[in-house]
Structure formats: C-alpha cells, structure tokens
Length: 625
Image 1 (spheres, rainbow, N blue to C red):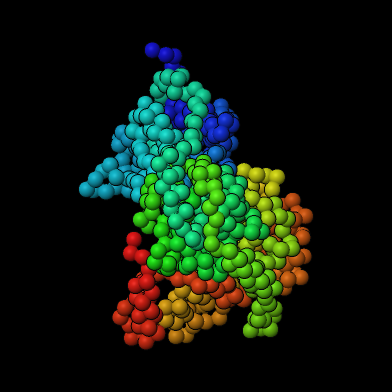
Image 2: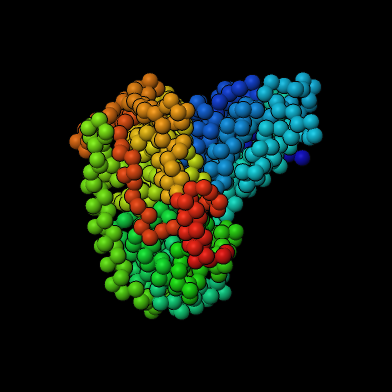
C-alpha cells in the first residue's frame, strides 16, 4: 500500500484539482486555474474552509450570481480553446439550481466546466435542512439532481472516499474533446468536512493527454471519392476547427481545391474575413453569400459542426437534390447528423490528409465565389453606414448595424475580443462582423443563453488580461444578468459593456410579428388604462446603472458620440458601460434563409393562418432527417 494523507473531502478535492494538467501537441498546460462561486451554509465550512486555508494555487473568484459564476467559467475555458478551465461551486437548493442554466450552456457548447453544487446532509440526521427540497416519493432526489439532464457526467459523493472515482471520471470527460461539457459532482455539506486517508497517488500531479484522433485510410478514401465526385463542394467551418487549431489547414484545403467555406457562430473568426474563400456566416443568421452558394452545393463538408437548425436553416438550406453531407467530427454523435458520411477524426489532421490525398482536384465554382463575396462586401459596407430614423421625440438614434460597423471598422482595436450571446446581436454579428485577428470573436449561440455576455466577458478578461474585452449586449440580456460587472470592478478586470437599448425583447418581437401575431409582451412599455402593456416606454439609463456598480457610465445616440465614448472607454482603467440608444427594427435581414418554429395552425387571426400555411409549405421543402 502506498502512503496516505489525512484530509477532509473538501481539502482533497482542491488538492486534486490543483494538480491536473493537460498535454496537447507536446505542450503541457495547467488545466484548472481557479474556482468561481458564492458561499452559503452548504459550502462555506466545507469546500470553503479548504479554499480559505490558502493551501492551493487555485484562485477563488467571488461571483455575485451562481449562474454568472458558471458563465464566467465557460467564457474562460472557451477563450482558452478548452485547454484551461475553472470550477464553479455553490451552496445547496437555490444556489445550486441557479447554476443549472450555465451547466446546460457548457454542455450545449462542449465547454469543460466542473460544477460543484453542495447538497443535503448525507447522514440525514438534521433533515430537512435549510433549503432542502424533500420529494416524498424519492428521498434521494435533491436539487442537485436537476443537473442530471444538462451534464455530460453526474455524480454524488456520499462518502469522502467516493471522491476518488468521482473525480477520475469527471476529468475523463472534461478532457475528452468529443465528450466534454458540464460535469457535475454533488457534494453533501456534511461529507465536505469529513476526513479520509487519501492515497498520495490520487493527489499527485496528473497529466491528461489530449490525443488527436487520426483519420483512417478508409475514411480518407471515402472522403476523397465524395470530393472528386462533387462539382460544387462547400465547407462549413464549425467550432471544432477552432478547438483543433485547424484554421491554417482549412485555408490550405480551400485554396488547393478552390472551395469556399462558411462559418458557424463557433467557427467564425478562426480564419479572417478577408480570406478569398470566406463567405461569412451561414444559415438562419447567415450572410447572403454563404446562403446563396449553399443552395447550389452538391457536397457539404461539415468540419467540426453539430449542424444545428440555425446552421442548416432547419435542414432547408441545402436545396440541391444531389447534395451529400460529409461529417468531420471527433464526436460521432455529430458526425452522423443529416445522414452524413461520418469521418470521426480530428479536423486538422483530416483536412491535411484530404489536401494531400485529393491533389489535382478543382471545384467548378469558378468566379461565383469572388462575385458573391463582392456583393456581400458591398452590402455590409452599406449596413455599416446606415442611419436610423430619429426617435419620436426628435432625438437621434443609432441603428444596430451602424453601431457594429463603427465598432468593427473604426473604433475598437483589431485585437479586441468581442463577446455576445443572445438576441438579435449574434445574428447581426455572424453576418457582418469582420474578424481581423484570429480568436477575437467570442459567441455563445449553441444555447443562446440570455445573460451569458457580461459574466463570460469577465472570464475572458481573466483568461487574457492584456487584451481589451468588449461586450456587445442588448438591453434584454443586460437586464437578465449583469451582476458580474461588480465582480469585474472588484477584481480590477476592465471590460467594456456596450448596451444596445431598443427598449424591449425585439428579436422575439420580430419573430412574433413574422408569424402574424401583433406586438404582444415583448416591448418594454408600461401598462395602460386598457390593462395591456401598451403604455409609455419604460426608459432605463444603463450608464447610471453601470455607475452604481462602480463602472464608468457613458452615453451615445450618434456616431460621433459613440466614437467619443469608445475613445474614453479605451483610455479608462476601469470597467465601462456605454448606453447606446438604438432604433428598434434596425437589425439585418434574413438574406435568403428560413427557420422552422412552432406556429399556431388554428387561429381567428388571418395573418396567423397565412403564416402557418407558409410554414407548412417551406417545411415540405426541407430534408426530413
């Protein structure tokens, strides 16, 4: 038997976390950097005591909302291309449940985050304890069980020695590119403080080797056969291209064979916007250039994409009857989607192997790629200079597209990391944002979780403190969750928050109106004498709100005011909130895309009936699986 050391379970957990490393392409990297959390009675005297002891290099970040803690951890890990991560801890009950949306966000985006919610007493002696939920039909079911549905791995440590198998399995998943996402290990509050003789072997430095999955000769042969048979192939650059560091391989592949590529939200910015084969975003939130060529393509090469409904326009976009799908993905679950020929392998190695094996092939796109790129560039240039109509009171307002143009074209340094994640802003940014440096486009859209933005920006800034980090966020998402702005101020981690205030949830209002429904419940208006929310606008001063958290508050209603505000924000050493008053309905258009949503098939409203009929007609044109 080897040597042991007597520790509480909380102390052993931190010592284990502090000694986890990954090795990728020959480089060894410390994997766990710290812990985000909020202490409550369920965690403060267990895991919290271990953190307070100082016997660890892990830094504790005091979050202000447990969901925000999880989002900050996601932002940190995503910006590090999943090669570094954080844990997030909470007390029991509401504290734990607040983290569930963040866990779902991590899982949907394949981002490693270790969630450590506290739990009710394992011994049950004091039951029911404060904040414990009792289920009369199953006493083992607690609030922490809510994580089961959104975690890639879930466990509960009911005895201190169970920590060993729980954490070994946790890191098996966290370090697996195909399986990674939220991992939840529930820690009963009494067990956190219980002592155990832990083997030193368990607590020693552990290196997890992240191996690139090599494509087989058979896989490459099948892929080459499909490529050579295609006249108009199109690559979809997904997040897997970014995480496998395959941007250069994608550029060489497309240049060798004259093949254009389009970007998902996860893949955007891996290759810069001015690459001659870059068609910009694809799908429901995509560009005219990508969507138009996608309809003609006879081979879709999905590289590291999960082929979500926004990317495929609900399987409607690929309208060429002869179109086939080639799925390159380390996750077999994603490689098989849309009846694809699966290449379950690393994106970088696969693209490199295909470039060599298919030498001599050229697509038949010809001048179509440059022509549609030129057309789209002219459209983006127009949007970037588009003025908005003034407000009803005669005061000027900015258009949403104009703000993006000013920030992207003139105001922010090219190495600024821009963060967003919900509403209409991600749609516009996927279409028109021009990434001028790799890794500066940070978007969460697999779960489109409102409130991700500010918290994630804090995580990004912790990851890269030398970079400017700018959050572009709607007023709806800002109101949903912005409390980690206080954490940014507390930590001295400057972020610039640009709030686009159009006084409502206008992304959903647009969707509602497109399906024949009148404006209802999405505009920020007071209740009028009729009892409906149709009164005066509910005005908010977001600059003052930012000031109340300790940030610098600035305002902009014109391009000139925006330029002055950004200049002052860049010169500031503290976090900044810029309140931009935006004209509603100044988002970009659909650009030959479609999206299937549930639509009422029976209604007294003729516009709703018409929308349902049109939805059924378009659904009939989409692929069935």
